[in-house]
Length: 110
Image 1 (tube, helix red, strand yellow):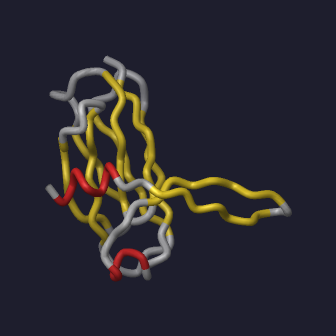
Image 2: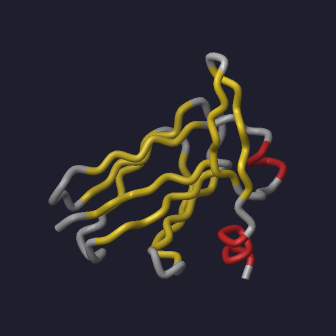
């Protein structure tokens, strides 16, 4: 139920950068994850059996989840640095990687 609440209560955070506002999707999280400034990079290659997650700026491991378009969680873990995830058994489609205050879209093509 907690994970569903995280998906439902999305917020919008506007960040001033170079005299313009950038909207970022954010989610309510624990105080530990809010106070840890991080940036998640999601890399995938077409027809690859793996995706790479890279956490920048974090000094401690943080939790992340990956959800399918149907809202079901397909993967969860903790990351500190770089992590390789096998997706060979996942069907092609769109997924969302949620880590800290960040939500990234992931497309898998097979």
